[in-house]
Amino acid sequence: MKKLFAVLGLICFCHAFSYAQEPLTLSEAIARALSQNFDIRIQQQNIAIAQLNNTQGQAGRYPTISLNLNQNNVLNNIINPAAFIQGDIRNFSIQPAANVNWVIFDGFRINLTKQRLEELEKLSQGNARIVIENTIQAVILAYYDAVRLQERIKISEKVLKTSRDIYEYTLLKQEVGKAVVTEVLLEKNNYLADSSALLTQQVQFKNAIRNLNVLMAVADINKTYLLTDSLVFDDAEYSYEALREKMFSSNSNLEAQLRNQELLHNSVGLAKANLLPNLSLFAGFTYNRNRQNLEAAKFIDGRQRPNNTASTRTLNGGFTFTMPIFNGGQLRRAVEAAQMQEQAGQFAVDNLKLSLERDLADAYDLYNLRRQQVKIARENKIAAETNLNLAAERYRNGSINAFEYRILQNTFADIAFGEIQAIFNLQEAKTLLMRLTGTILTEK
Picture 1 (cartoon, rainbow, N blue to C red):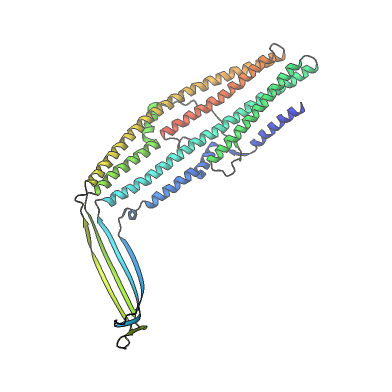
Picture 2 (picture 1 turned 90 degrees about the vertical axis):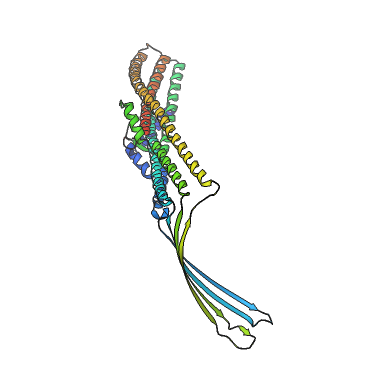
């Protein structure tokens, strides 16, 4: 008997200790995830990269300037009796050069490339928004899942307390000879089963908190919290047409697909640009200085020559004009292929719109169904709790036996669990509606 109560004491102590932790609201959990979640931080880096590339220079608007420096050393060792000069001849040269190239016209490719870079930046922002919305949705569900398990723990504690009271009462009846051994063993088994169920609920709660910590990128995944927000039945009604309008104007996946369509349209322009002429200017300056060392050389006439130094300066400039005439139809086929890809992209947009409308209709019906299920579950719980309270008195006065009372006790626990699950399911359906309509960032 003492061992059984020690188990109960340990369960209650662990549960009480878990509640003596840092308070955490849903808004705080979302804020932490937005600032620390690794997927969001990866997208922030992608946005930074896209912003870095979105410049006129990256598009090719400005001229390119290059400086070159070439230094060359040559040693010639001449051993030829018929040669005018014998021995070592050393040549040292240095050639600095500067070149400028500037594309004046390239079939509007520069403008189209700049537009493409702008669209890529917007696309990266749209992708980041998708990740943010997915993260917020995951945090909401993870938080309320932990709350759901927290509420199940409370119900299990209430059931366990009832089992303990009945077990103690049965032991007292046994002492006065009003209970047989089988009845005592039955209540003991019920008490142990409820203790095990509570322990299971507590482990599941810890797992849910760990999942929440991963979403918030908390290094200590075993850190626990006091979840201050509760699962509340919000009997809100929504207009399908209003939700549909919001979805087609704010859904992040649809916006991303439309960005992709803009990129495909841009690709058609880039393909057409290859059919137009290209004009570029170029200019360059080269300086060449060469020094010939003849100190180790021997001349056939015996006279020594001085070292030679020569320099050359070269300035060049002009333009390059290129006009594609014929290349086997490759450029024309590239334009046609780009136009086909654009058309395929439009099919993808239309398909996504149709799929989203189906998903919204399903989610809307699911939300309204779960609203009704919550109302039924609440009424069911009230009736089950009332019946259990009445049964407790009837059990004590002997009107019903232990088996009958245990059935009513389990029924109440299942119905109470069902109410919590129904409210969680409703919250899940509501979150899905917010995600589809693109309002999850504003209606958290």
